[in-house]
Image 1: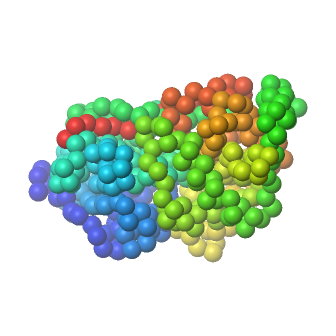
Image 2: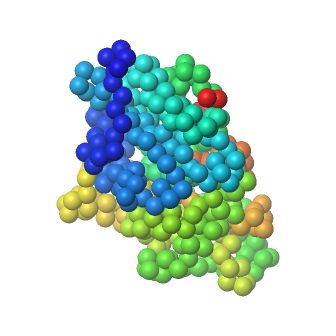
Image 3: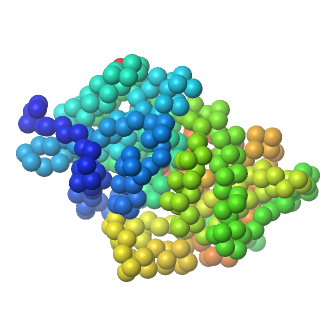
Length: 377
């Protein structure tokens, strides 16, 4: 115990519940924090449920002061990253604290100790177990809501980490894009889309039911590996992770919001997964799924003026050939049909200039920035 702060490791169901629900107290009156689904968050960290533990190890800690929880953190090791990619890195995630530097320092010390125990050399976060988890500390855009697949944090988090000797590493940007009617949408995108479709003999895949999507999900994740495997933060996705995320997120997917492109041999060469915005619904249900609360999610699924881009994958052979224009042209038609007028992008690595170049064709607003923080241990 130091400065009346006690750090407690949690490994029981009650401990997991306390760990997951701490931000509900911390951000109770914050209009910009969007709560996650409590049961889903517990499943993500429970080693008896999440198959990621086949190639990962984790410890979860709570900071207690005067009998009250004042902070939390997870210490994570992805052994594929360490053993196969040779990055001797301990990750930290699920990082939330009150504005007390001592709380942050003691929690970070637990992660560093965990990393040194495994002979690791650097610490980085906030990240999850893999690239499919929420990542990136918010460093701009504190007066904007997070989406269901991104993190929210107060401005002082970055100040704490910097005072503890961390430096920024990877940087992400997020855009809010205004969707005009199709006639007013960029002619350049429409013409280019048609041209690229004809030039490479490409075709669109359309889905009517969720079960129609399932046969393509594994192929989408394989394509995701090919799309991003050269990026600095990427770790290959394992099949059991795909199965887990498929089970977790398929209920939020509407078949109209999935856009896939195949080549003349029926091989998937690009896809985009988009979702209606669930932020308002998640604020209303406050982390709990009940029969009544489910109605808020259903309403968000079917009656919404906002959407979020979740994942975009393009085969390396077709990157920088205009395929993204085809995807967004089809999304434009979808958004107009659904009367969606605002789309929020998923965090994009700052160096991903090709996708950001596309947004310049639309009325857009760079409204959030994120970063991971690192230091040698």
